[in-house]
Structures are given as C-alpha cells and as structure tokens.
Length: 77
Image (cartoon, rainbow, N blue to C red):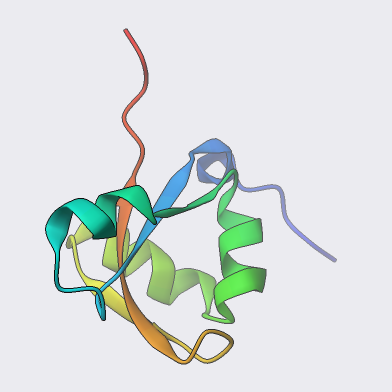
C-alpha cells in the first residue's frame, strides 16, 4: 500500500515566513526527520513538498495556517 521512498531519509527544515527577523526565523526553525513526517505535520502532499525542496520554494501548511520555506538540512562533514 505504501511505497518506501529513498528520499524520505533526508531531514527537512521548515522556516516560518511570518517571522520577519531572519535570526529569529533561524532559531525557530521546525525540523522534520523524514519526508513522511513533514507531509503529515504540514498536511501538504508529498509532491508539493518535493517540488518546494527542489525549487527552493514555499508551501502553505493547513495545520499551522502559515507559509513555510522548505530546505534540506545539510549533512555534517
């Protein structure tokens, strides 16, 4: 029923765009450990999230009633 998604193992960062101060926005970032968790918490479709990550775009979350900029968390070196 559910397919395993290879890309689901990336950590996704959601920046609240309603916060104008950049430092405060960075401090209050929401971190999702997998794509599936981000999809469930933000209540956005998986394709919408993937497109926002690929295009460095934004999504509107129905659950938070806010707009978020989504980014992939860089891996530590």
